[in-house]
Image (tube, rainbow, N blue to C red; front, top):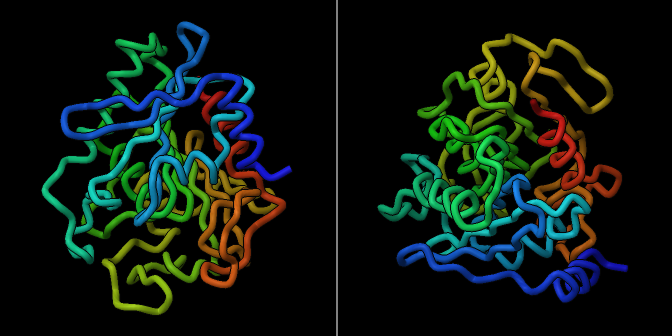
Length: 264
């Protein structure tokens, strides 16, 4: 059964996500039935939506039932801090918006304030990384097929998990210009190795096991070889012709959640 069908059944059983307004912005919220559960903010890709990332990732199906928030970007685009982004970002402060979502989870849904996490895909992954640098309350962040501007790469004590592919046709593993379908440059990102070096202060991984690389005690990168620019392990409909091969044998959603749960 496709993940998006299972997710629909799960949402019927748990109740459809609440659409909450935060000023002039909004987020889908899947509250946990358990007081003191963790909170997870899930950031969608460029030109995508909260509903699409919910179906794509399947986080709503997690057995642990954390509080899950799916924010909506302004005109489907995040201000992820890239000064050379195209089309140009608006003036909105999306780090502050993510922080609003976290505050909502703590104050109204009774989430554990010591277990707040952010994960994103594509430019949502860019914003997750930026939040990891600027929001001290975060207990961990994860970025899938995302990156960070050379202007923003800096050390961070926030625990990090990244998923990157050497064959990503949109976000180059070796750094440089983001491009979709061979079109014009959308702004630059650091090489994946350089991102890990700057974040952790490590020159290279401290341990490697298959695709998993430990970069010190609180940072992990999964280095995929041939995966395209897609959420690994999804069963939702995706276009491999447009974005490259889907990594069927790597379940990013569960790997990320297991990483967050294992953090102190």
